[in-house]
Length: 421
Image 1 (spheres, one colour):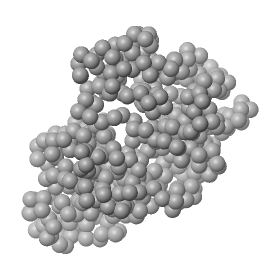
Image 2 (tube, rainbow, N blue to C red; image 1 turned 45 degrees about the horizontal axis):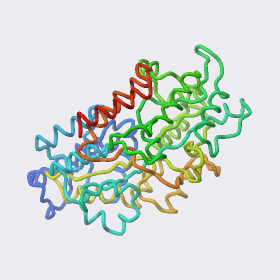
Image 3 (tube, one colour; image 1 turned 90 degrees about the vertical axis):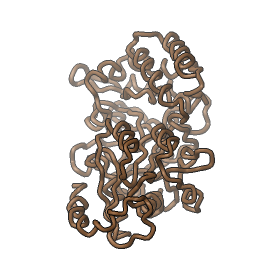
Image 4 (tube, helix red, strand yellow; image 1 turned 45 degrees about the vertical axis):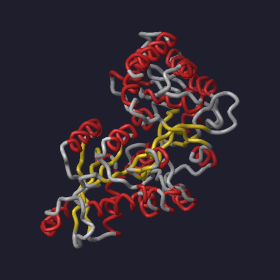
């Protein structure tokens, strides 16, 4: 459904592109006529925002056709690293993570986009600060996701429980127990906590001010107690089973196997699409993430996604035009139309978002969509990748109870000190 028109058009565009493609120097400011722009993306078929942006950009710029360079999501960081190191001339590179961005920009593999970032449009981009590298910007965010709490209204109604507004983590744990029912194949969990370490680490850092790169991880203890309490009570699928069975958060929520699922706003687009396709009948809503006791504001975590121009792009000017479009109001309108949260923030975009067919429109959903603070999922530095590996390894050991919370945290601190700092 997604690829159809553009891929068919690529072949036709190729013939007309040969004289321009022969340039290959990255300085295409003087070229005119049809251009075939290449954009590195992941899992094109299951990530509809890409084709939506390509179609909208081509409509606004009929002389530029976009050819996706589709890479498996799991292979994307490694593949792009190899491409850039080998002098590949793919024009636009999607920055899947901030860690990738820091690595590529630090190696001088991306073009300077500071003039775009500091333009009036840049002032409207949520998440832009994350791409500030000593006053320079080498990518522009086009989407800004953050975490909310998805809940199944039917399961809440059946349990005669009010919808999850203003929860603390202790209330969330107690509510999950009340919403858990059945056994075996018919068991319904009160909550599903996915296996990513961010479910514990990033939310804890966001709400306590803890630093995931700092080497002191005692701030994680309370969130681990919450995660293990859910698991010990049988209110969530245990970590080991979820890893072994490769359990998907979408299937847990959309099939009614979990009443509450903390997850990023990217999941909204999938729920809307699956409801439209008739593959789920989940009656759903979103609420703010649970907070620590005494919190009077909603704090969550999130991360932007961005496009960058390859330093060796074959069509640099057209690539910059695409990056600018994706982060503009026009680009935001395009992806908001399919339920993706754009980086470009405005009242017009928020209004458009809540008029999408199937989108929850109650006040709780609107509150969830406007958190008071969105802290970064993971700070970026030259230490990020190494620290991330250590924290992920120790997280698994704690969640599978091979180490106690205290021992696991102590090991994180020791390893980061000895292996990174």
